Image (cartoon, rainbow, N blue to C red; front, side):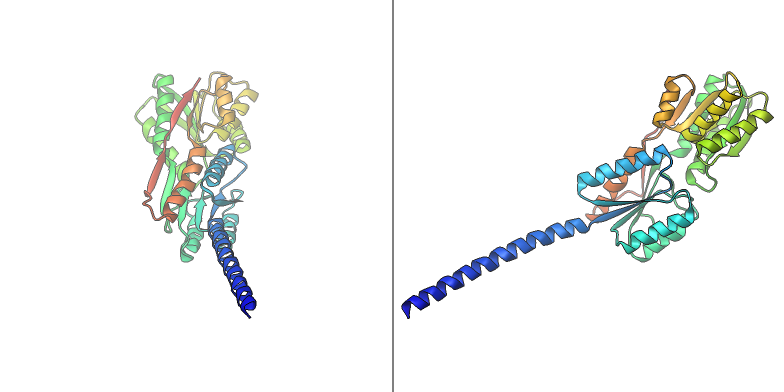
Length: 307
């Protein structure tokens, strides 16, 4: 009887230890699952543009550093695709939505859908004209436009004919860069904007639009393209037409643009920091989820790059 009692107590002790160990392991796994559930969605206007690829890379690097799962969706410069991407991320129950809008007006419906599910939204590079956005991270595009204008005016000694290649109509980047450039150039009465046309931030469109402008305009001293892709397209058109002495200024600071500057084909670019914009987006998402204060607007510094 005594032996049975001792055996019973021993078995009870072993079972108790096993249960305690089991509970401890379960808590550890649960903590890991909670961490794993923290997911950030990133909707990019297009991954056919090196600038936005770099922005995505910056976001991915910061997400990995902070331990978040990052789901990236490509809107392919299509607002309906953008809405579908956001709806897909809502279904996947992301904790924060980062979005680089295709169009500042069209994106509003997508943002409102996220708002209705209490998913916080952060916009990157391009702003939204509605919906509840907790933070916008971008370069000061108006200031960048002014910087491009001042560089061109100084290089041309305050006199000449200028062509302006505009981005996608309806985007905040195109609107603000154009505003800054036009207002600054207006201070120089002997500089005329002789042609202004959208090429949608696209290199091939920049080429075709510039070809048409070159045929129509015999005297061009400078081109301001609202991004580097259009600037590179314009350079190709200028070279094909064998036109000399045309100053080309872009915006973004992509690797291809920096090479063109080094090679003497492009005069300057207003360099943004796309990797920083992407990284800051994830960093602000992390701060918000931790209950910390997030500023409504966070600027990313611009820099004029010349040879």
